Amino acid sequence: QVQLVESGGGLVHAGGSLRLSCAAPGRTVSTYAMAWFSLAPGDAREFVAAINWSGDSTFYADSVKGRFTISRDNAKNTVYLQMNSLKPEDTDVYYCAARTYYSSNYYSAAAYNAWGQGTQVTVSS
Image (cartoon, rainbow, N blue to C red):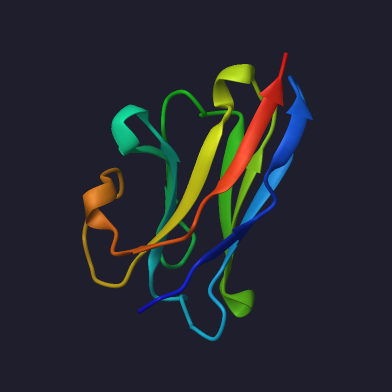
């Protein structure tokens, strides 16, 4: 079982920035695809961004392209989500996800088999 721990959420004014971190204590995640999702209505998970195991391929939801950047440091077993130009509509709980098997699907929550507990991001207008 892969344990994921998110941090970095908080309250920020519109136009501000936050950097979320996702660590996997005691576990090597360098071969895993990683992603960030937000909480959608009905407790569904909505895709935000994903990164392949090596970090040379990234994927983004249209709503965050040009504002958010996903990256990873495999030496630190950590994935980041740099959130810039934040908007009130970005307010949500953000979850880190990992996939321990190969799949070409980066966008679906069902394609990930390990999840963090979530971190709250609140953007005030």
